[in-house]
Length: 283
Ligand code: PAF
Image: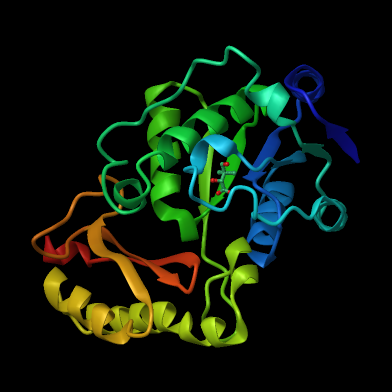
């Protein structure tokens, strides 16, 4: 397994792969890998000639009061999993390599970053877009893999990739859930057994909403109210139904919509979502 800690040797390795005619699949992560990440890495390995994993807990996407210091760092276990699923190279840069003194350049994706997680964490998408642009420049992938659990993040990366002509295919993979429905997240590690139980109301609320949507309900407020009623016992940050690409609210469910929730369970902030596509003949 090749492990790189700075951009130049990472890029040189990727350029050599490209020169040999190989396609590169890339999974950007902050480590603390779980089955959700595993599905991304497996897809990257299966759909490309070589696959790269990055592990970097990015300080610019955390506000000072958030869990940057506490975020789980499990490099040995992550490297072992990466080797098992066919990753060829790990890019694990240090802060000094990513944001050296004098660093001054950020990527701001407008509009679609205003609501949902962008509303409650105003710093977040600027940090994500900036670090992903830097990672893309170091890894030079043909395809990059993101999870639907962070559906707004995937939409932001798609927008950035199109707007900046990066020429990378963004692949969004389905949410991986625990058997009881809880969406896999590195932050699930923070939950006590009681909190873990309470956290199930996010996926249960979304499952009720999916039933309503499948049964033909098209009023966003009715759907949101159903999820809100199911999410008792947690501190709701937002429940929003938006157009899945533009991330703007709708007066009626049409096209592909994203129903996204965020809530604090104890000290832990969790997110989850479903997507739903209304049949074409409803347009
Ligand atoms: O989803 C994540 O783990 C992070 O936001 C990402 C995309 C690796 C950027 O730091």
